[in-house]
Length: 98
Image 1 (cartoon, rainbow, N blue to C red):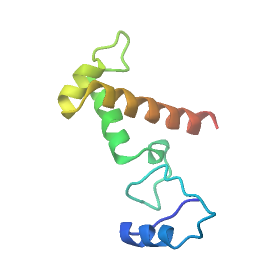
Image 2: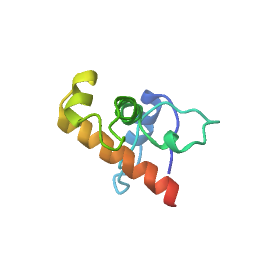
Image 3: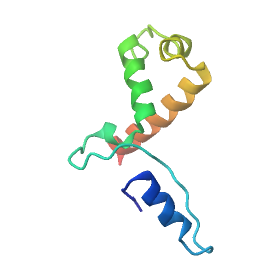
Image 4: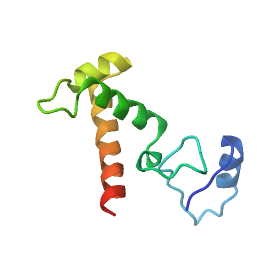
C-alpha cells in the first residue's frame, strides 16, 4: 500500500496499528500527484545519484566516470553511490519491463 502524508501523521498512524500488523517502509520522498514518469519511482537521493551518474558519463560507452568520481562530486562514499545506483537501476528497469 502507498501512504501519503506528513511525516508526523504517517508515524502516528503506524504507531496506532495493531501489533500483529507489520510495516516495511520501502520509500520516503516528496509526492507529486501528476508525475507519472519512470523516474518518479526513485527516492530523492536515488534520483540525485542517478542524474549525477548520467551527467558525468557513467552510462557512456566507454564509461567516462566511476563510482569514485560520482562519490567525490556528491561528497559521499563510493559504496553509497553503488547502493543508490543499483536500487535506482532496479526500479527503473522493473518499471520499463513491467
